[in-house]
Length: 301
View 1: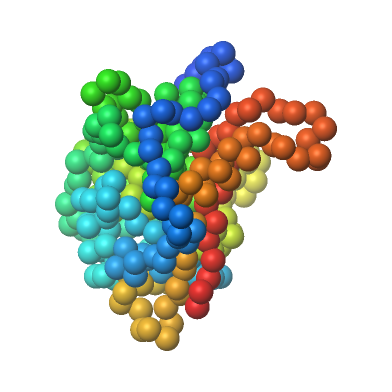
View 2: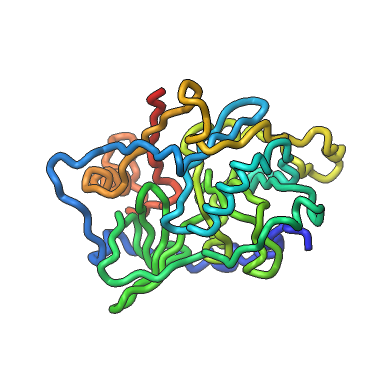
């Protein structure tokens, strides 16, 4: 079955959106706790064993993987990367404002050789599970926030609840067919506005931390009516994908990302929500979209 995932679900977004502003509540979740060490680190260096270097014809991209949230998908993706599985593979489904999707020819021997995976769209949390909260009564969730640099959402109760990663721009997730447990090797990057209606029903397993401009520059394959179709020869092809740990030391890109699990980041979130700046001569509501809360990164080498 072609892995053009959930193309009909977009209509549901408009129906959901009309209830958004009636549900907004500002402030933080009291269920979350943050470290309070006086010398807490503002930055953390990425682990090269959990980082992927994607080389495109027009530039390099660094991806942070999320084994703490999607261990089986990260394991299989990492193994495929180390085998050179994706080298020479094209981005065959690239829709402006939506996603850039790549993988082997659908139904090919190469495609069928990869084991399918059970979905890892959400996980259980207990009442002591901590994260840095962003917004209560989000459009798609009871609470949004960050943990280990990744945007997430939660529903909680007295015992705990569920948490899941969110489809923010730059998100890396695995494509699938209608069967929730049919993902294998086809993946996509979110390149447009956040398609949060895909949260929980797809497996997110990474995010772009460097070179997002190169992801945005991938050739679109979908054209507007009346335009000449894009030929397969024009599709953007992956030059190489490597685990950063396998890249020669002198060629590695060393990236640090903002530590989201401390009070300094929580303070920045509060300031961003308040919009306490003279530029905002008309104050917007105290609402903060988790997907419009950047997590900063910097190139060390």
